[in-house]
Image (cartoon, rainbow, N blue to C red; front, side, top):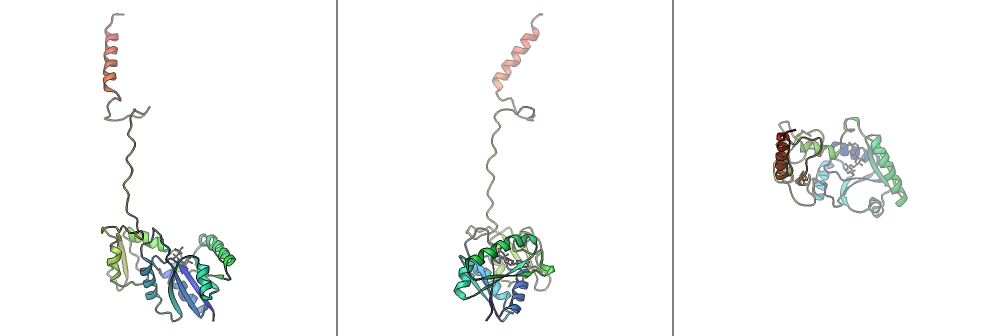
Length: 235
Ligand code: ADP
């Protein structure tokens, strides 16, 4: 039995992920999608939500299961007798990191990494970009699987509003004005106000401070009086 794992954080799952998982499912007898559940401050979706969304999205693949994992991926593989890790490659920029990771994993356990090239239509697609587009009001339908309607209220709580757009079953995500959650898992993180600017105590040389009075009004007036007295003295 040939088994493989497709690891990632899937925050959220995109059509690029599903494409890789689907293609892996034709190469291996069994595929386990491993969802990283390590605590991170920058997650939009909780671990349970990410797992649930993947289960929904992968329901059409008979030989694919979804599990959460924390700690080392190689430990996850060893515990399940899995010897192949499937990763999608989008661009050269992915390759540097993925090669290093593949070599590290091979040094830790008896696992090979299989690289699957992204389909051209998903080569620009990354979860982080989807989140960014969503936050600034962009329509991400066509980039992510069709999520169920009820999920939007939960995400709304975290400052990003998911809603079904006019077109059938597609999904639109936009930044909401709802309160941003304060849990560790919330994304985007709550805004912090800027620290107060340092107060200017002396006029900067060469910089006109429009409307600003002299640094020391008392001394300045005395200097003016002295100047006037000097000018009125006979030569
Ligand atoms: P990370 O674990 O870095 O947060 P992701 O969860 O976003 O990564 O993605 C997991 C893996 O899915 C990536 O390592 C990559 O192999 C693959 N992947 C992500 N997006 C795409 C895409 N658009 N096309 C092909 N593969 C992708």
